[in-house]
Length: 355
Image 1 (cartoon, rainbow, N blue to C red):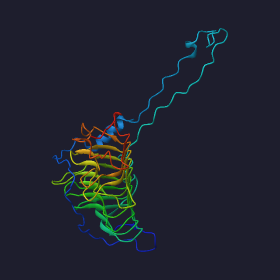
Image 2 (image 1 turned 45 degrees about the horizontal axis):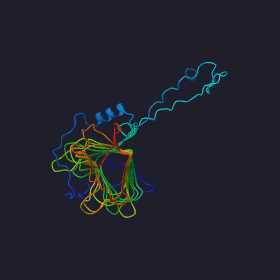
Image 3 (image 1 turned 120 degrees about the horizontal axis):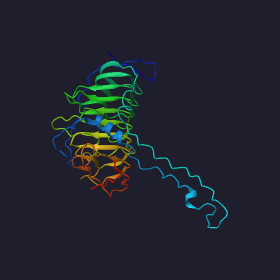
Image 4 (image 1 turned 180 degrees about the horizontal axis):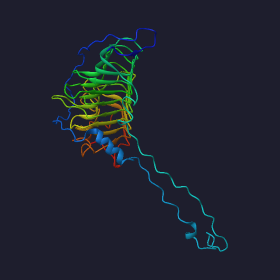
């Protein structure tokens, strides 16, 4: 069936159905990465996130001890100064409430919202600027060759070898929100969302059963749930991956996501120098777990990374005892201009320090 598309002008509401061409290129990395044979964790990330939720709160805070009875502190008929004559007036102190539990994105608040009716569609290409794709069940892929396209309330079941959603080079402004992207687990879907263009926003999206969740060098990924990748021979497996510097005047922000690589390679968040020096990246307030190293932090052989901020993230040991099978963090450049490492902890509150 033809896709159901909305657009800003009174033009036809359908795009021709086309199978995407194979535009993705796999490049051998220049940075070392863990290459241990993949081994999934029993129960997967769905059970894992449920266990995490059950044992939260992770945020610090405690109940204040109840105030002591003032009459017990001073004898009857004796003033607090020690002079007789007055019983002290009790001071009423309101206990400090506990800090609220820290909430992480998961299956209940990402993906297609409950109650949304989806119309079936095959693969298609969007070629009109400003198009809105809303309420589809796509078996195949969506290729975007236009600017400022929005994909929402849509489920993409990747069946071919390359991507679920692609924004091609030369285009910008793609927003994917309240959607789900996944492979069928038999034939490889290499990328959930692949950005070859400029800016992209990924918000409240669930991505799983793919080799790589989101691949982009700039844009915003927030409030999303990436989990349970699928290993295929020869792959590097990353949930969010950047291969080089952000386009001049832009940045990459990865904020408040649950990112779980249930394999023992490569990373949950991977900032690589395959195509240049990493710069202008913020990784903040995420729940991170798994992979060979949970976080590849941007250092490499092409030069010193700059303006890389790793702030207030929580690393979990629930996939691997060390966070990743090798450890929590690799390739952090403490001396790069503007680089910040601050407030990153384990679930139990212990500090995560890059090696």
